[in-house]
Amino acid sequence: MFGAPRRNPVGRPDAELVAWATGGDRAAFSELVRHHGSAVRALLRRMGADAALADDLAQDAFMTAFQKIGGLTNGAAFLPWVRQIAARLLVRR
Picture 1: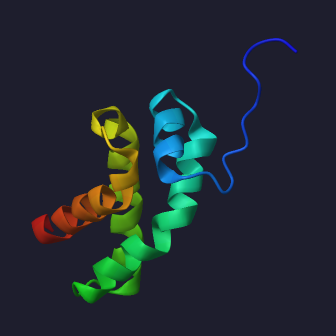
Picture 2: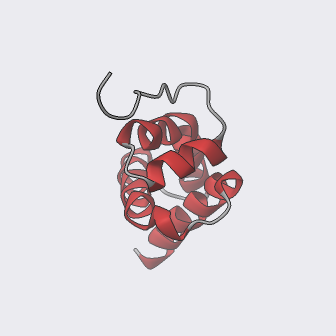
């Protein structure tokens, strides 16, 4: 009854989750990670990272994305954006 109603992020479109995460909704960002974590790890594996490194870099990529999510203007582009972050992290390694 008090404060904003609790939103359920499960099954929401990326654009909506990004908007909520930009407003500080950690559950929405967690849902983005759940949706796209395996795709980011798979990209890193295809680029030559072993499983442990892919897991570490995916985590780093999502942490960076969380810190910079306010700069993402098109929520539908979340996956390509976070994949680009992950690829850059691998290349810089």
